[in-house]
Amino acid sequence: MLISVVVPCYNEEEMLPVFLKEFKDMCKNLDYELWFVNDGSIDGTLEVLRGFSAKDERIHYLSFSRNFGKESAIFAGLCNAGGDYVTVMDADLQDPPELLSRMADILAEGRYDCVAAKRVSRKGEPIVRSLLSKGFYKLINKISDVKIVDGARDYRLMSRKMVDAVIAMSEYNRFSKGIFDWVGFKTHWISYENVERKAGKTKWNIFGLIKYAVDGFFNFSQAPLRIVSSLGVLVTFFAFVYIIYIVYSKYVNGYSIEGWTSMTSIILFLGGLQLLSIGIIGQYIARIFLETKNRPHYIVSESDKDNIIKIR
Image 1 (cartoon, one colour):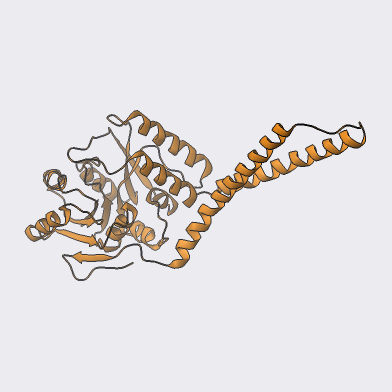
Image 2: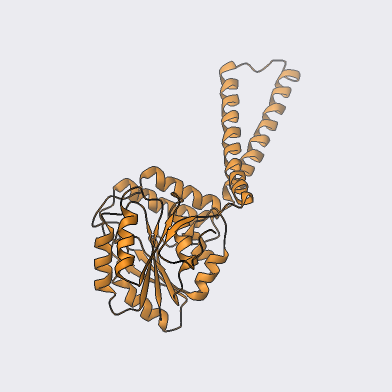
């Protein structure tokens, strides 16, 4: 069985030679092809990939016309990978290549369509990042229809029919972890200890992770809209009760309600709630706007092969 390995790359000039050496050492008994996707890197990543491809016919690369993001890089790799099995790996070696042989053996048994990896620890990660990640998994599993395993990675070996199903979901706003779960198929999980990056610097920061989490919430949950609707009903109810109380106090008890400060506070609270509600609704409208534009997920400006899907 031919295994296609999709590797998204963004400014990984320093890391790529380390990755390739370890991958070849760990996977020398596998029949594989490597698809590196250069996501608009501004360092020497493209030059390194050209060199890889020239020396090894099993190595291919796609180079985007600009930075489209990791999700687009994964999608481009899946669209062009031709293997019987397909996997996604990060170039930082935090997805251990030595697991790939075990994944292939399990998948070859025919009982599963996907073998996925999950971390059982976050050793080496900043405390704040670990806490935010744990909170993300707990929250999204409560408010979303998809169930994402805590510590799940994009690193998974998938059968061809599962890959075809993932590709068929051509939505512009992509969140792969959610998509992998949404398409279904039987999945076997492999646990491993966290592995730290061996070279270079991570491209993820706190703000990037928060944005990624927000994309997950809005792409796979309508809970924010339901919360806003419930708050609207609740606030309207209390406002109606308060109006009855004011009218009763004035015309039955004969005195009016005073309190400029309290009234101002209520107005500011309601104004803030309205802006929050509009912002949440705006997030969904923005996603509808991008979907209706029907822009491509990626544009390939260069590749070592001619028969590829350059725009999709």
